Length: 97
Image (cartoon, rainbow, N blue to C red; front, side):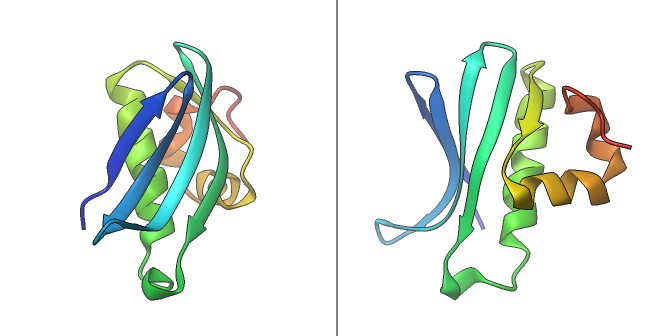
């Protein structure tokens, strides 16, 4: 499954698209070049239960590592993933304990 990323004017999303329809998305804002706020994650019924939400968060983590960005996971789903994955702590603005 390919996860795409698009960004305009300080806002962006990682998403899965099929036949022109977005089936899953995780949206974010960039308040500064080195900070990403994940504010929403949504996975459509077709992909629910297939670990897509976790893959979206993983993609954001890899993107953050590549671009030296710190993440603030305001989205409850993303926040819960970060709590379960201490190995993602290197990209958190304030590591959770």
